[in-house]
Amino acid sequence: MTRYAGSLDPEYFEQMFQGTDDPWSLETSAYEQDKYAHSIRVLGDRRYELGFEIGCAKGVLTRQLAEHCRALVAIDVSETALLAAHERCAAFDHVSFNRMTFPAQVPLGGPFDLIILSEVIYYWDDADIRRAAKWAGTHGAPGGDLLLVHWTGETDYPQSGDEAVEKFRGAMPGPVEVVTAERRDQYRLDLWRMSA
Ligand SMILES: C[S@@+](CC[C@H](N)C(=O)[O-])C[C@H]1O[C@@H](n2cnc3c(N)ncnc32)[C@H](O)[C@@H]1O
Image (spheres, rainbow, N blue to C red):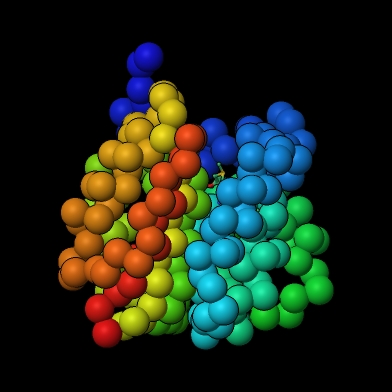
């Protein structure tokens, strides 16, 4: 399978959201719902001060993360996805949405004590992964968590799920404690704690 070489651009995703209501079946598939439940479960009963979700799509996971954060900033490259995410989370005043292409664009503020990268790093090339990891390492709060969830099957994206996560970890500027490293049939879930 030929892979994309560079990071996939915003138009790629905007076209996906305009072309079908639910690309990747994030709203409907049992697999996705189980994966979301797993993602939330590993956070335990910790409540975070300020979360940052990168690539929130239509906000299905965002809505569940909102219960674990006093404030949550969610971004995506797709305006179409963000409109739906905003609507889904309308009851949550503490969740804000922004159109951004990470890591070229990053939010102001922080530090963030929860950073969520669910099914998004493998769309990036090596340079963007390095930049993203450096940003996370310097804008994550000491003692804060990084949650990464990625499909491990074959793709035509710039990285496989495993390459994406390993490259990201290798580019983190400081050490992280591995709290959870779990593999399921089709995905891996990694929860790392930043040094206090
Ligand atoms: C496969 S979906 C995953 C959505 C959600 N994180 C989840 O796990 O259900 C990937 C999302 O990441 C967004 N995305 C891709 N590259 C991005 C980037 N560089 N910055 C922000 N969002 C991005 C896409 O528009 C899409 O909504």
